[in-house]
Length: 429
Image 1 (spheres, rainbow, N blue to C red):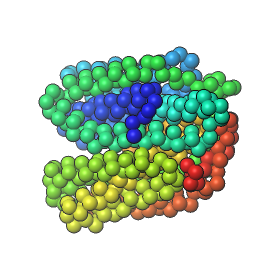
Image 2 (spheres, rainbow, N blue to C red; image 1 turned 45 degrees about the vertical axis):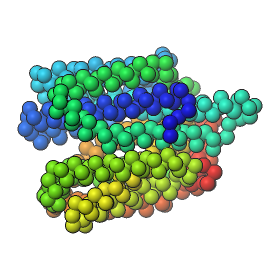
Image 3 (spheres, rainbow, N blue to C red; image 1 turned 120 degrees about the vertical axis):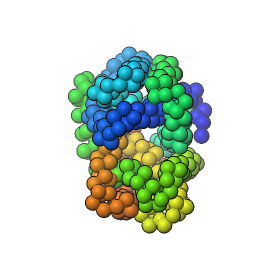
């Protein structure tokens, strides 16, 4: 699972450090805002602020960064995150909610853009490694070899993401308890400095022919999404699924305490078991990089839906934990399958902008989902919210199954507007 390429190892290490540090900051900010305001609305505003502006502006920042020929532009983004996080630490010492929300919004923009550029860089470096190896043997690299290398890079990043999901919140809680929220944010800022130092030599510039301006680059990405029906339906379906997947997040604590009568310990156990299942799913995806993407995408979505339906019917914490393992495995296979599918449906020069679109989707849709979940609980019950999420997952599974993903080929020399796409279901991958 560890990449053989030194460049990919640096990217993976930076990604891992970033994910862990982000969890430290996430926990510190959530606890501090609630502690100072004792307001659920203020805490919700923190999450909405971190989702709304990044969803709108992160793609613009990605396009602008890719336009810059200066080496180390991605490292500067992490330096900006470090500076913003230090500012947030200062605002926790002398708490001022409006200032916190403003800095969180700017930090979210930088975070979504940096993650998109880092994922695109991993895919680009993986392809370059294959091309360099092929040039030494005197033959051109095969599309299948490049696809597999990029999926292996995605598998490594996904394992780091799921491992951070399993361990990050708990470590963040321990750090906040031991040192306090401001100190935890300074640790988060230090993690961004480490990321910057690891990526200082990484180039993020993308030549885009006539697309000289930021607006033209964004237009090229939107045009590509529109011109490739499979990609368009894929993103719309996933966005809808994310809204309802996220809708159960604010419901889980009520579900664990009031429905299952499991208390805070049961709530923590439920989250921990889901995280362990997600780590297992990441291992499954990593060991299946040669297998077709379509079954893993649909199967992962189905497992998440079955988990939510299991939550809705579970008579006890033990049964709910069994469902959480299933959902975690689905989570750990579905998300990297989506990332790999989008990359294979997209020319290399558009990877950064498409990854930023996914990042924006992943920032905005949960904010909508939180409101949806709260409304369902207010009108009915936590079990109803779980059942609705499971039902939507079943519909998303059917939508993914109906996508015509077989028999498609990607011309690696295609322009950004080309509608030619790769085979996601063929066994050659």
